[in-house]
Image: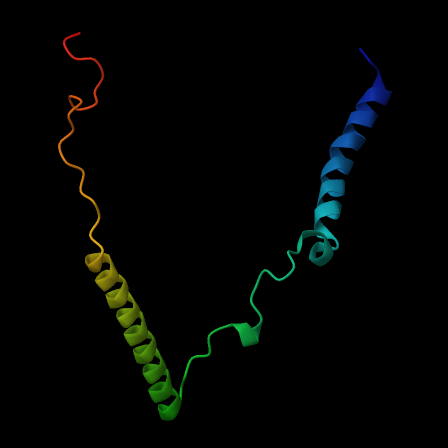
Length: 102
């Protein structure tokens, strides 16, 4: 047997260790675990329109953005159709699967 001193030391360690862990992680949380600029600032976020004029303006803005994206997409599709890609024809090397007859 190791004696009563070892038992007192183990008991003290068992009591102090959780208290130390709780003290370390429980104090000064804002400086220790904070991630700077994690949440957006209020002026960076989206402002929900509540007034009738604001709602109308927002709908006009969204409609203009949608039409702009549509015209850009149609232009890109028109350019793609104007320049057809070269379609690969049937190959003469036997399909490219390696040696044949082996």
